[in-house]
Length: 152
Image (cartoon, rainbow, N blue to C red; front, top):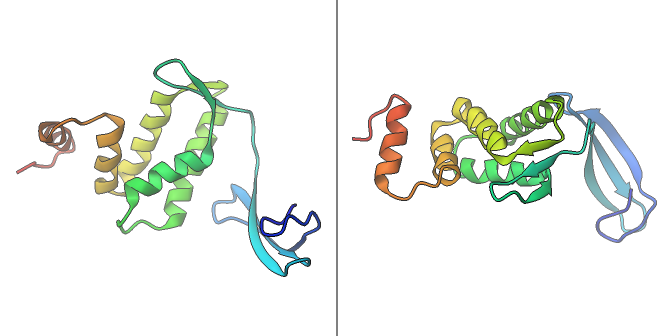
């Protein structure tokens, strides 16, 4: 593994253990050239996934982009990083085990909403507002009413 700080190709693994949900291996590494430490994660990738967007454009599934969008929805909410990782791992696992290599972006969005709904209602509404393209306050009111809450 190449050191992200100095580019040295000879780094050492100092510690290796499974993540909390056992979906990945976390490795602490050390670079003897610059004395830096960094962490890598090793995950099983069952197949290469391609996301098909609304306009038909195709792009490779980006796990980091998925995690980033969930983090944005959860910003300033009492949601820990492990919960976000569990949602991302679950979504990725479901997509990979679906049998399809091309996944509609709408399906990914629905899986994110499903995960956020059980995690944090505010993050759920935040994500929905972008995903469903809310344009005015009435859109929020209508959506919140579907949750069983009151907009008043």
